Image 1 (spheres, rainbow, N blue to C red):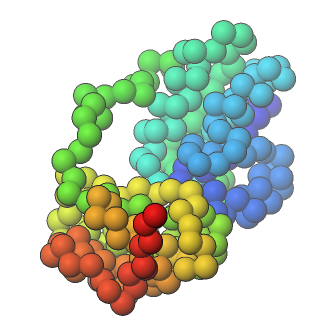
Image 2: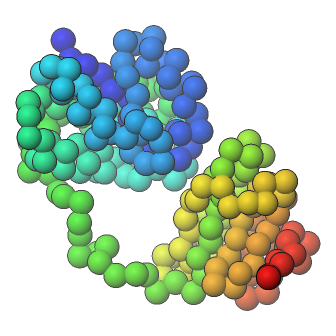
Length: 228
């Protein structure tokens, strides 16, 4: 018998934690996250190994738009396995991400064993800071998330793709709470020090097409910026 861990791959899966927990409990599985959620995959693997589990199956869950590629699941698991000082259990990994909770059975039906020789956590492609002109800070705090920030992210990413804006043009990152929460959803653009509030998908597209492409802030959603 193998212990099963459902692994949330993206920030959206952290937002959908309650639904994934219910599904995990129904299956007698546990839950871990690749990023921005607890427990982390490494912590959950350590807990299970310390408890004496000899076989662990990992199924990546991707219920959002911006999850990292499937390859990151074996990368992180292999890093943990190589660093593990105690019992190293057999680890099986679903060969594809479950794009919804209804896809989990299909992912469980096709697993591959971890070898320990998977790529590590570094790459020459990730050595240098990108050449971006703007860094877009998307607040994923509780209020902004509840107010529909994921719809704004989806709109921004699609607009950036349409206009061929890559990481060397715009670096879009998710953050924890940025304040001011009453203005949720909040997005800030650096180094311009421009803050936007009450952002909706139309405003998100305008930020891309007006601010990021033409360097003209979107006044309709720009927040006052007080300095001491």
